[in-house]
Figure 1: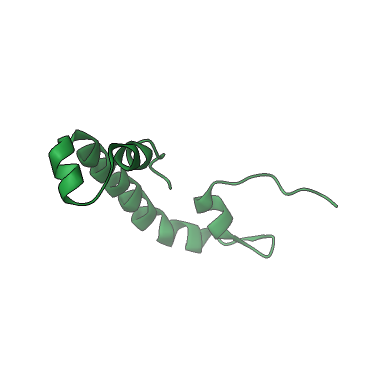
Figure 2 (figure 1 turned 60 degrees about the horizontal axis):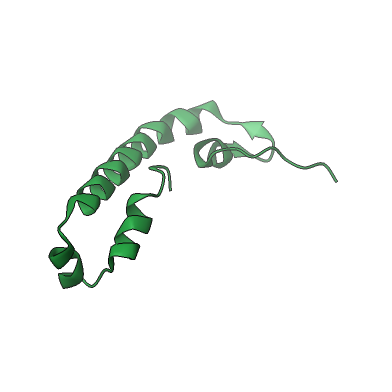
Length: 74
């Protein structure tokens, strides 16, 4: 069995049935980048919240740290 190389989500989503669909790639690139930017921004904001506000929304410091430490593409 041949192992497929790991491809980041944007490439894996773009390659269908071993066929490169460039139009699909371009069409989905902008929304994907906007999602990544939003992920990075909201995680940065979450990390900056004071502990009492985190508790108020039902998150422990550990949960906040785990979410803030995620890479922007997840």
